[in-house]
Length: 133
Image 1 (cartoon, helix red, strand yellow):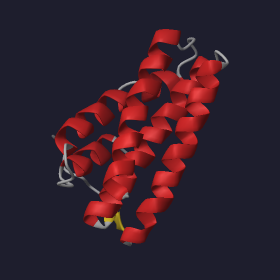
Image 2: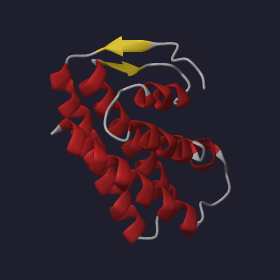
Image 3: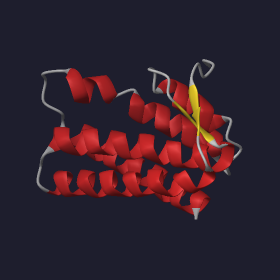
Image 4: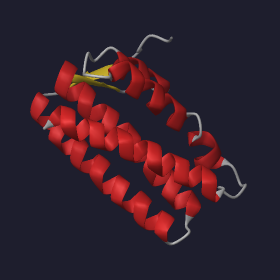
C-alpha cells in the first residue's frame, strides 16, 4: 500500500460538489453505454469513481488526494473511516487499473470492459451519496 504523497485541505461542504460531479459523470457514463460509446462510457465511469472517492474523503477527512497517482486516492479513501471504506477503496483501485487502457491506448474499449466500469462506478457513486448525505 502506498502512502498518499500529496493532499489538499477542503471544507466538508465541498464534498457535495464532488458528489455532484460524480453523479454527472455517472449519468454521462450510463448514457454513453446506452449508445454503444464504450470508450466514452468507460472514461466517464472512471471519473465518476474518482469524484465519488474525493467526495467521501473530503466529507470524512477534510482533504483529498492531489498526487499524480490516482492509486494514492484509493489509499486515502481506505483511511477515511467511512463505512465499508476498505471494500470501496478496493473497488476504486479496480476501476483505476483500467484507466490508462481506456484513456490512452489506441485499442477499442470492449463492451464488457465498459459495462463493468459503469457498474463499479455506480456502486461507488451510490455509496458516496449515502456517506455524504
